[in-house]
Image (tube, rainbow, N blue to C red; front, top):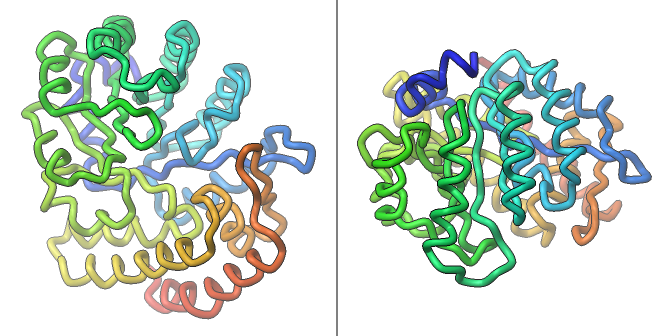
Length: 313
């Protein structure tokens, strides 16, 4: 599928995933913080049974900065073997050599790749960022999404910069925008490129931003919600999309009140959907404590899941 898609990156990839949410997967760990492939298999089956069709592996929600290059390869290979839908592999890292290694590996296992700007060096010269992305775009045979997340990278991918890359590199498929400026999101709507918003709060509003869909991390414990929002939008039922968005927003508010990081919250919440699921995270993140986990599970069980099940698809 990757080779077939490579001949027409932007439109082909958007046509396959358009209006469908992309679930940004987590990486489960054992109690001694090794990658737990058994739990990963159960979790992928849960996402698929909930209606998800496309996933992004080894992204921020997957704790990619805490994984070695070898672990990221293992996670991608395992996921590809078990996931029947589309797989986007995040290959971004601080070292361009590691990103090249991850790209070369991903081209045999993923339908598309995404790359965040290199981080740590604050406000690097634009020429250096251009060289970084140009190296990857000139090498890839599968569509590539530039991943904009300036809060973490201290690098803002401007619409002008993205447009200039599109002129030179035909394998540029679009952008995953996890920035907070929706004016920039709208300006990313460049002919031939796809825009995916990295915010669950935007799921029912992607049309307002000229986007094709969302990449959802917070939707992992309740994947039915972003899936149903997308189904409603495809059917032209904006009222239904907004109703499901209100439930998803309630989950987002629960996360905010918990005081946990997004990853720790998602893993704690998944223990309600997948009994025995490991909620461990790697340092420097900290997992939910027993009281936090109990509160999250109780709220999901009593307030969120009944609404999902009563209106099952």
